[in-house]
Amino acid sequence: MAPSLRTVVRRMGLRSLAGSLDSAVRWVAVSELEDPTPFLEGDELLLTTGMRLEGDFSGYVARLVARGVAGLGFGVGLSHDEVPPALVTAAEEAGLPLLEVPRETPFIAIGKTVGELLAAEQYEEITRAFAAQGRLTRAALRPEGLHAVVDRLAAEVGGWAVLLDETGQVRHATRGARAEAVTGELGRLRGTRMPASLSLSGPEGHVVLQPLGGGARPRGYFAVGAREAFTPVAHTVINAAGSLLTLALEQGGAQREAARRVRQAVLELLLAGEDERARAVLDALGGRLPGEPFAVLAVPAEALESVEATVFATRLPQAAGGGAPVEGGAAGGAGVVLVEEGAADEVAGAVEGAVGVSTACRYGELRAGIDQAVRARAASRGGVVRFAELAGQGLVGLLDPAVAQAFATALLGPLTAYGARPDLVASLRAYLECNGHWDAAAQRLGVHRHTLRYRMRRVAELLGRDLDDPAVRAELWFALEAARR
Image (tube, rainbow, N blue to C red; front, side, top):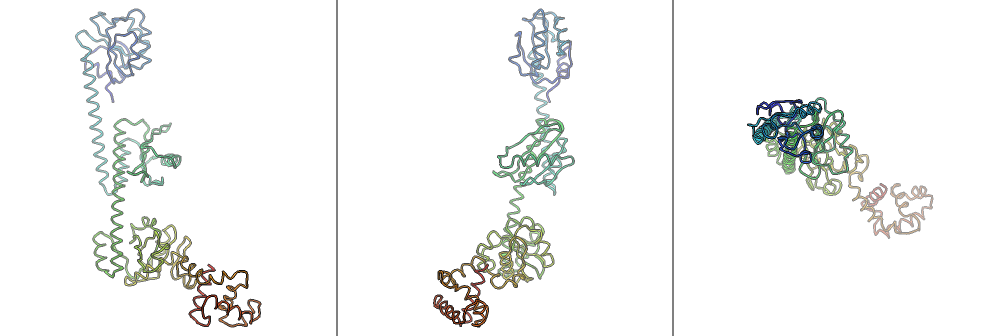
């Protein structure tokens, strides 16, 4: 804050003739012009000897007041032996602070004094800012980290603060925080490029909103508000808090990614049968594996963050289960969770998206458990599916739908390409459903059994298969079931 006119008067030993001495002095200007206002910005202490001033001073004073000068210092002993009474009267009527500057006080001395006061004030502001930054840094080192910085920031500005995630949801807010106004503003800005800092002012006070994160996409946001406008020191403190919050978020993300890589290495050790080594690695990081028996969950990769703080969870390695569904699209972007069997339902229910749950297994059966979970997830339409539930859906339900469909299309292709002639596919289904009994199958189709016999001979010719072979019948039945799904 700039020094007051009272401080300058006291420091220089000047005499006040009119007006209040509470106004702030941001600079000193010297001018003998009848109208110096085009060269002023406001808040200056204007010094003059009045060599061109005489007569009616009301217009001169009115122009200075309109320009917002902090005060007028009139030097005596040169062109005027004393401050003109008319100037004193005009200053009193207009409320312009008027000072008498004695002959022995050089104008430059007043300028130097004001400069020193401004420099001292700026140094004090910098000192306060550094002290505040130190308190914010110490807060960042506390266990609660991000939340402690937000609380400290609110205390430093004498207002409130709120921390939000990248979606605009409130993660932490201090007492009195206007969180709804902040989230509403973020909603209004959604889809536009967020500025580095956004200032809002209204009847309820002043708010600064800033994004967090070093990339193009914010990792989160924070806002700080107060009744009074923020000072330069407050803005410095706010920017420092933004840097600390961004650093904490980036470091937290790097630590989470490193922990995920360790957990994936642990999973690979488990798959290799190195149970003791896997436990040793995880124990060194303060983690633990579930006891036996446990369940394996296959979840969307983006859901790992919601559960990895409480259970063992990591990305699913390629071919972890040894089967095509694990390597292919059914497992694409999947994560794996190992959880004690009794907690499987609770953890699976907390995950958004398709979730597959294996049967109870031991670590020696982990690869099979992962395979079961992945296959169950492939059969899910967005909810939780247990592998045990697939038993009632037949063999087809255990396989990747795309693979099963491709197999059915290739095997039954010659029949579907037979054109407008009798429906050989329907005839084949009826024949297989009736276990090769001609009369029952013909009755189901509404044709003579000799007609059905002819059709089955045609099917065998087109497919090049022996329909009396049980293995051929099994493949054809599987293809018919897969084609119907």
